[in-house]
Image (tube, rainbow over all chains, first blue to last red):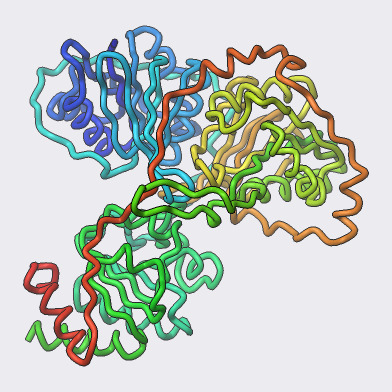
Length: 310
Length: 256
């Protein structure tokens, strides 16, 4: 088993993957980071060597790094490539897979290495099932979502090299239109309140907004609230194709618990659910629940919290 | 005049899958199949772009015999013709294998624009489109919710985590599309009847010069288990329910 290459355009995510790589690496397996930023940071979090990538040209997309990474996989002897599973990272890992004629696993939830194989775990069928795969064909390209693993300080000595980029590229970046300032980051919220179709009118979300204010939480929603009703922006819907909740306290209000929504809350700490449907699937995804009409429960909840806070 | 190909996958409808909680196995005996959700958007986008350029759309899929049923739906949604790579070796294969097969088919035609969904609703690997592009040596633009072809250039808007990215690349190119790029029309009776007259070319792996062993080499040892949420399921009811809930949350320091 040769070395592990870890890449992400997001430095924090790269360091999280370094944490896991150090944990699972076999004796003698080097961990090589490739990214932007400082070699000292990557060494601090476990890289034996860092390739620091040249600054991107103004008209270059992040994905223009693919030929350079491919060259690196060939030059170093790499058996496992970990790529941060942002959307850009997923495109990069797929393209590296094709160039290397390698298998690729997307959005891995866990990974282990033994002498004979790499074992990965991920969700399939909209979150309905967990699939475990044992791969013996190398290299293997695995993409890893943010906050799946934790970074750990390892303080390795700094060893780095510059990684030059291909200037030849067919795709040009014309413009970036960033999300509006003040857009909440659902995936970083410690307390999250998700509203679903149990709410009848957009104005009624005020009840949930009040709860969010009382508990210091971020307001989010299920996919239909964003994509069908347009009551909230798409950046805040939670689910398989949307954001994941990693909240310590997660409120699920008026959400019936469709599998694609539940797939987005598996990593939440405590899930509190309020829904009127006795038989809703949300109950099996609930730690603390009240069955009933959210229009009477939610105001009562807000009042009780206000009272408890004094 | 664009020559467009949309690749689609005929998948198990995940909403039909049941889980046996005790044994953690999946029950697939009552499942129906469908064209993967975002692939419907890719077919619709093919229709839109073909119309805009007075070009044509071919719909393409690879699978075993079960996949044949997908073509009725695909052709009633659009496309003048179809190509079906049918082989027993192609049931539930990985993205690496699928991309290899699709690239082999696409090389035989001269398509300016290849469209795919961003990911399939069953596996959601989000790999096939970019892999196909790399195998063909085409540029790829992923996660697109706005697409226009201007002369020999594709100009596309990608919806990414930090906002919209506007990019361009020359044709021929591969584009993977998001669900909000368009609203697929539901085929009417006329489209469904017309679909029956459209030709479907069937190819085997042998026709593409791909030995079955090559596809088998992409397989991995795998096992599946129904996801079980291991949650406390503590329910509060009666007049004191809300007070008890708040108490429970405060005692754990979840609300301060």
